[in-house]
Image 1 (cartoon, rainbow, N blue to C red):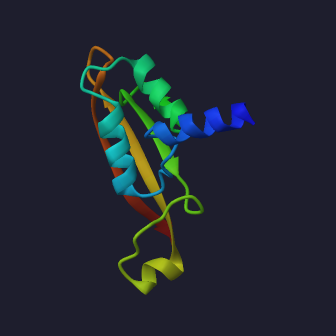
Image 2 (tube, helix red, strand yellow):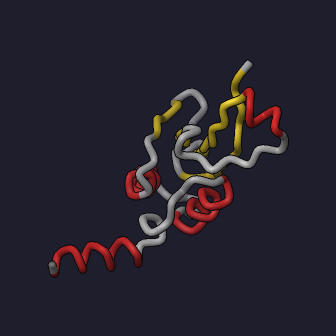
Length: 114
């Protein structure tokens, strides 16, 4: 019982775990709160792991990339047409500078379909 209580307190106090990262805004806020310009790749990978974000590294574009799929993403559809015919994902890019440290990030919705 004590262990469950401690785990619950840790999860609530951690800004990443207590928050469901399923919108562009929440993901933007989480990255901004947890990463600073110049952070190492180790810090970036630790953040992504703690946020339960599955990622890959694109060595040609010098960035980490991840996708929040439609069943996990809370997408904003601007029209019924988009909602009916397209799948929505949230794409995350964490860009690195030439030294391999955190430079900036991009988070946006994208649609795929017909």
